[in-house]
Image (cartoon, rainbow, N blue to C red; front, side):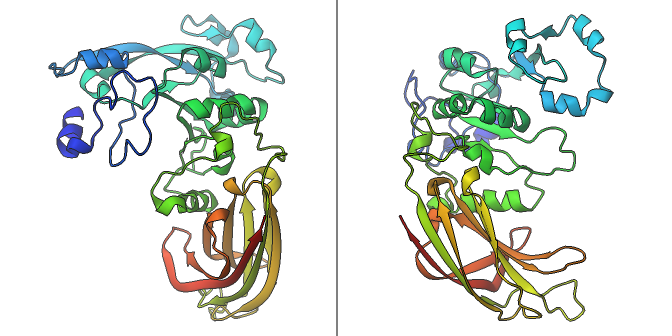
Length: 385
């Protein structure tokens, strides 16, 4: 794999330090047009540098990796798990210190941690420079021992719990280290969580099941419309400042809110209903705001009966957006069906601050993200601070 990466990617593969022995991550500008490998890594960057130019073919090393059970996932699988008595007697598993257990309230299943030995090819390990995958233990450990080039992966259940109980520590952690959130293992149906809740605490990489379309993927795709859909978005200043006191669960005192007004005027050649014999949809528009919890709100137009070609609503909605830097807005068009539930026709999601004022055309996309051109909405947008 290491040979293939080097031969195929060539100079675009980042395989060496940009600045010898620096203790800070390089800027995205310095990494422009480079491909970074994120993987488990043996040893330090200094040891990698010392092996530069040597023959590493066939060399494999192993190291001990820290593992911790995810309480929520373990509770879901408790009926299939060994008994706690058997776990306690296992020589490979150690219980957490008593002092830490005392801090866990309403715990139905004890948490355990253990170490496993992992084998890694040296040639592949040495291609990992600024994105070494390292298991997350706790914020105190990261603050004292985590290196600048180490990034953590945290399961959604643990991350959600930390975002509620240790929100300031979580945000400070993401100001220093790249943090990845991934779906819990019990999502056997490849369902998704809303990535917004983890962007709110500064997580840089929020992994979703891309094979599953729906609201979470709409928000994901809309988020990166900012900055020309380049794949890189600068976090707001209050999520980059290590001294920040920002808490997404509370209305910030020093925020700069905006009053957003949207008038939904009409629709243009909206998709027809596939649940109607006449293909004439009873159309309505839902405008939903995502961001910090206090900003999340939904408004809905009235229903225009049997008209998907040129429905007219002329309805105005007003939103108070307290943290516009994190806010996303989603326009969705549905066909009303009282019996089986509304039928999805199309949607468009984008960051609030990406909207221009005035009369605007809102394109629509299918559930799988394909353009429904020429289907669109005609709206008027205005906002003031």
